[in-house]
Length: 130
Image (cartoon, rainbow, N blue to C red; front, top):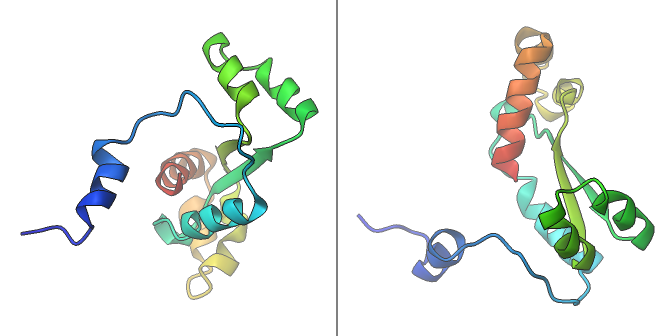
């Protein structure tokens, strides 16, 4: 059985993918950010919960505040990156479920009324989106 995904894409995504440790100084445009988000928003999440939240850090002042909270090994590369995206999970995602899952609005309270359940679901599903 062969995979439908082109071998070049397989290499890019799985076989040759590595953590970026250096960045060019080429700016990241709003259009590029939007194109990336337009793919991420369709990531598979249970109950369409989409708990991923993205905070973009562009200004030198915001970057300076962020860098001081990072591990020493991450400070220089983060300071030099043209854009920093902080990915987080919204533990209150269930408040949006009636709009995101209109055919089953009861899911909000039926499955996610308890905070530990929401936190676990948010962490797993935000990781899927990321």
